[in-house]
Length: 299
Image (cartoon, rainbow, N blue to C red):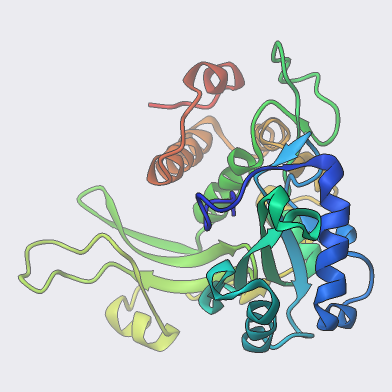
């Protein structure tokens, strides 16, 4: 994502270059026919919504393809230096000649294997509105913030809705609850932070274990309420305890406006804390003034 897998090789692509580039790609790759429709209908995220795009993200129906075979086929006509497979994340990054002509440069095209309805939601990016910010007067699918800010807030909400947590000296050390995955859906997991080998505190990274292993370590823990959610409507309903708010989850503004009705001020403060921690971990710029106008506490 973001067009950075082939820095120095790829460039941003113009809006009018997208269709001929994807048409060339489809013609060069015979197994594209396994998935009906042209590539323009498979685009995810912000591609094609602005005058230029950093990369093109394509949903590929995971049940139709063997990713190892796809990586080999793409390598045959793009070249080994222009293909990077990430099977653990169900992704293949490629550098594709724009309009099929290397002299025009290359654009990064990412093959994202998964369920289209879920990925359309998980990678959704609203239309950016320039100029003075009127947070409450935006139209559906419009935002003053990039899609990343919207999606990370959803992830913070998901993390907040844990079934069970355990803290030690004010730090979270164990959790039973859902995790938001772009490719798989919202998956309930059992995770904890093991002790360091020298016994001096706990490691920072969480370790996932089975339910049985977790309950042996933390007998007082509650078991997960669900296994997995793969439908956006079900996830939104879980987060606000009411159906019919999927459109509100298209932007950061829409989400924050909605959850103010369903969470207490104390809960919103905790959600904001989780949210800011997530943004900091990604080294993303935090627009403090704009967040303050929305009512999102930064500190």
